[in-house]
Length: 264
Image (cartoon, rainbow, N blue to C red; front, side):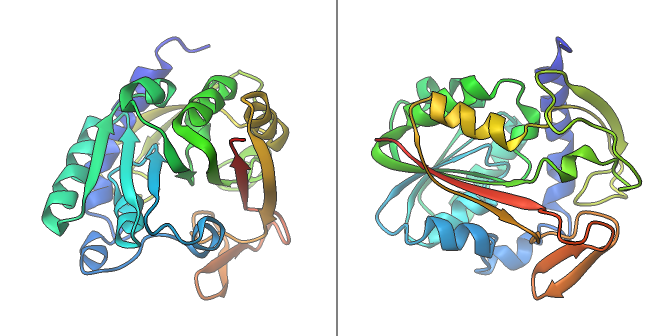
């Protein structure tokens, strides 16, 4: 285990946040004018949130969180980056959207929040930063009301096995607790951003994710694998339908998966 993984990853996201706020990828100005940052997968699976209390874990700067608020949910967002949470609070005030944003580690979410929710949501590039999914799943369960539902949309661990240029296998399907450390100039939202980040990540197989949720007492309602992504993040990404991207070198490969689980 890389002992300072949390500090390295927090520093990485503190550095990324200003670049993301200015990027075309997040297109903050369009979103502020009423755009929705949520993708068709989560919109279909989470469904109507009007009147529900929704928690967004690892919410970054709150773009998706506030998009749920625009759809009628009472929202709370949690992230460990102080830069991101400060930006989320500014957006909530500027857009006059009722929301609470808490700066805390996801492993201490239940204590930091002190309440439970109808819906807990998290998406796209969240689990790879966490070494222990059993502890994470216990936090998810503790934040749900009885009968509440958890929704996860995440990049598929099959793609996580490949090098960033997709030229070959570089990582195991499941890290089994062993991290990989990498350095990057720029960020996925802006490859030319003048930042240098060091990341510590884990690839979690579907069995590990599902097993952690079941171990925390949740009931699995659905597991879906999607052969497209709403984001063109990989070399050779081809838009096969509006807002749907596949990878030419990985024909038919699952790029994203989604899970719905319920607290009994």
